[in-house]
Image 1 (cartoon, rainbow, N blue to C red):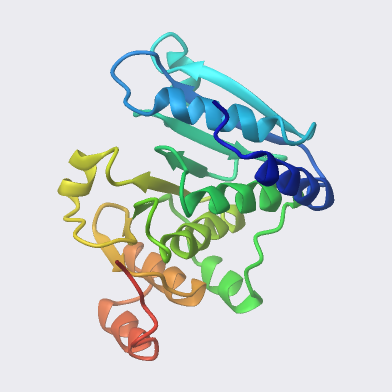
Image 2 (cartoon, helix red, strand yellow):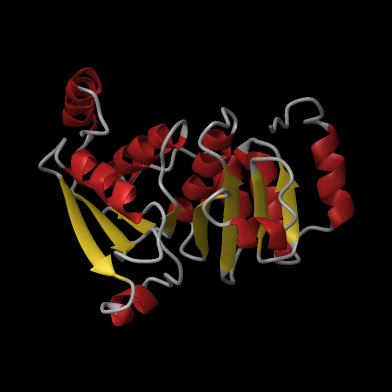
Length: 235
């Protein structure tokens, strides 16, 4: 049974026809055993790839294609890398269903057009990042605020070669969620130690990245966050 309705498929075909300019590659890492949602994730990605001839789906087995998985830093499944002209560091861990399906589609459009959409002031701050940064955004498919947090992290990854940003579906990866004390979503964890709860504007997210790499102090970030009181939303 198809995961996309006929109505949704027709809408997305038209949307992507208008929105895509360059080719997009989705590298899906999966396996047939010991993976609760791998089959559903592959079906969803196949249906998405069928929406446009500019989208190519490549499917890899985490075990038998170990070298490919290691090259992209993939250690758990299901995982998807969304690439345009290059690998921007955009990762999906878990099925991007519910609200996160929109994130997947918007990421496809963004990488196709090489367009992160970040303002110049954020790019100026981001230029200070000169060492690897790993961002993990914990979400659930029913969280309406989570896509904004994931899109912000993925935009930063597009704009900086130093950043890799993961969407992590908390229900599918409970051990990870427990490790980082995820009690509400979205929750962003940067380089294992710096945390941000709620959906925040890119200017605040990049400040937390700068905190994680020692370019801003926690006190400076706290003062900045005071200007966003009431805007950080989580469920």
